[in-house]
Image (cartoon, rainbow, N blue to C red; front, top):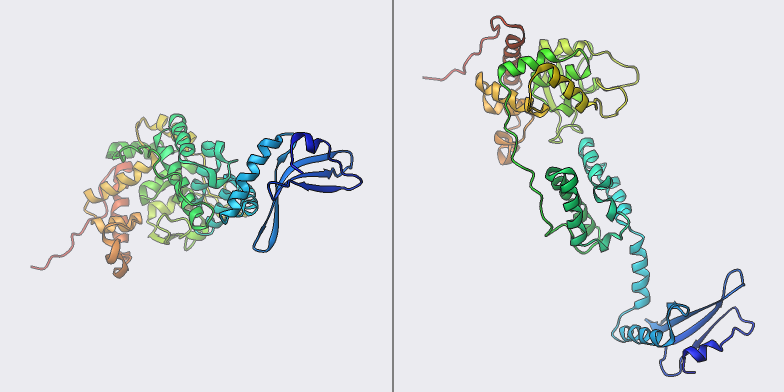
Length: 406
């Protein structure tokens, strides 16, 4: 039988539930009649059947209601030509169907589940926000291996327009790292982020608060969680998240703390960081009430500790009168002012928990000193400097310059 629109119209099941009629001129090209599950309708479709590695493969080209006989014949010729060239269209179609189930969002969820055990909690939250929030949501439903450079570029342009270049740059970095993981996992053959425009993050901030501004901020701090966090940030030079997420279990003695060990899971470097606690800092910590069944010092609900940063910062700005500064500027200001009063650069880096400079590269591998005595002296000197700023009066701690042999 030569399959045409006229010849297949006369075909019937004749009591069968499934029957295939093959074309006499194009071997493997067929017309299938199949009774629907409710047995109320006969389904008609065009099929291709061939052998591959001794096994019979069959795949549906299209419904006969959608594709005419001549179009189906042309499609069958193309499919059978691929078989002749050694391809396996049925297997390719099955693999494509399986890949289509791996949407960008479903693979992102798998990626985040794997990364949650490998990165710090704060880093994980940031990556999760960039990948799962609205930034790339229009692409979430696409099969992960079909996302193109054009798709990513269009989203980066939109993110830059709506949220700024810094957010776009960081979102781009998060997506690129994700696609590198996809390539390593065999889910994609390329990284569509490569070659897309890289938004500019802008110049690094260089704001350093002067002594009157530091004192004004200190005096404007309220006797609440945020106020205590800001004062501790001034005394320690630590990052806001490190202090805002501080836990009672990180102190040697919650009642009379003398040392604070920032957990490795919370440290930006991924290593535990220990700092001695001087009297002014200890006095502030002692005023923090310890809540039952909560390890964090600050915040009431968030597992990450304090979270109401923006609202409290705006109120602090209004009270202090200091403008154009961010909480992270305190860290830069502390480092700068410590250097001004004679603290050595490598001790400042140790206090800040940096891995650059004297602890980077090979030097850091061999030099494992924590400079505990020097760090304690430096923090005592710095706390005395802060005390003179906020209380006035004479300095109590006298800096002793290192002895130089003659």
